[in-house]
Structures are given as structure tokens and as C-alpha cells.
Length: 163
Image (cartoon, rainbow, N blue to C red; front, side, top):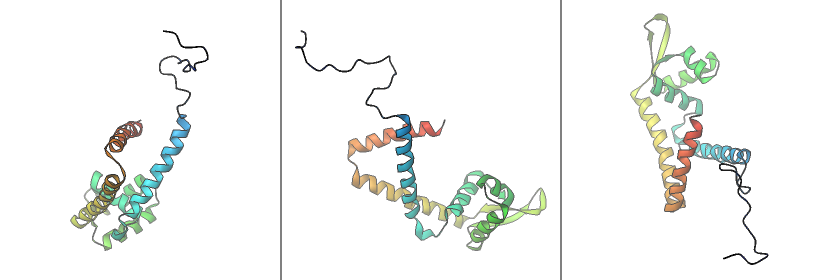
């Protein structure tokens, strides 16, 4: 059966894998994604403000947890800060009992910093506050189909991060 004359026809499709004319550009998706991820990160940071950890302190605690003990100089290098700044960060964490200092076994003139049990518990509390806020926001704002869509987007974003 043929269509009556004047009936709108769908636009011809291009070769397989070519973008649909209605698809957003990669540049627009990148801009929008970066903006929303930035807002999400800022919001997550504010959920654990009662811990009184600065972003750099949280980063150092997380690094010590994941990579193990390290010298001040090594932490400064990987955190991309000056050793003097790292000494201040570590001093604040040490005064609160979140990190401990021990002599470097290979060079007694240096100290190795490591996470204490209190530091580990504090870091876990910060993470739990962030996850709890996000889970509550998802439960309150998204229905099942939207949660599935976000879960699918997480897989795609994870794939981008691995590039």
C-alpha cells in the first residue's frame, strides 16, 4: 500500500552508525555532562561538611587508604601540590589523629605517613554521608524507569572514564 501524495516521509537514514540529525553533538553532551557532574560533586562535598575535612584533606586520606603509607614528598607529587602545602595538610590531619607518622624504613631522615583507625572511620563516615544523600535524592526524585536510565548512564560514563 503506497502513501498518499504529500504525506511527510521520515528523513533518509545515512549509513549505519551515522548520527541522526536530531542527536545532540558530542560537544554539547560533553558541555552538559561536565556541568551537571560539577554540580553533583559540589553538592556531594556539602553533604559531609560536619566532618570539617577540606577537599585536599579528604583526597590525602583516600590516597593513603588506597595506596598505603607514603612520604610527604611522594604525596605532594601525586596530589600536585608543593611539599610545604602537603606538610600543612598532613599536620592538620595528624593533629586530629587521622594520620600517623613513622620513620621511613629505607631512610630514617624521612617520615612515612599512614592512615589511622580514626582516619579510616572518618573517611568512611564522609563517604557514607555522600552515598546516603545521593540514595535518598534518587529515591525521592526518580521513579523506577528513571532509576534504570540513570543506572544505564552510569555504565556509559564509566566507559568514558576508562578511556
